[in-house]
Amino acid sequence: MTLRIESLILSCIGYSKRGSTLKSILSSCDYLNRGVLDRNTLQKNLNLLLKNEYISVADNRYYTTEKAKQFYMRHRQKGEGCIAEWLRLSELLAKELKTSEVKDKIYISEDSYQKALK
Image (cartoon, rainbow, N blue to C red; front, side):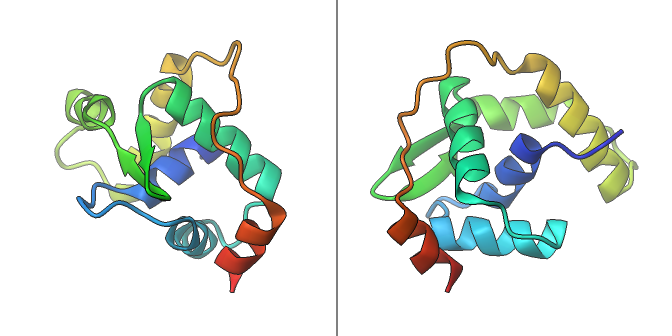
């Protein structure tokens, strides 16, 4: 099993009621994955999660949706280690995501991306 980028991004957005900024998503991805996501990869996977209704966007903040929370509740297994759970859920999420006809609703400019990296 391998960790998939869309699952990493979803985990980095988390379940905060205040949402996550681009900067916090990039920082969390860097911390967890030990590498910074490039702008195109980030944009592509945010759009994939948005199209599949696992995230929403408002006022430059990203939120997980009820659908994302239900996915986690449906598939969690008590007593499973954090990393094992993350990898397993990553594979399950990949099977649920519809990847056809993902239109870019989220656009991250190079300037916004660079500011978020600082």
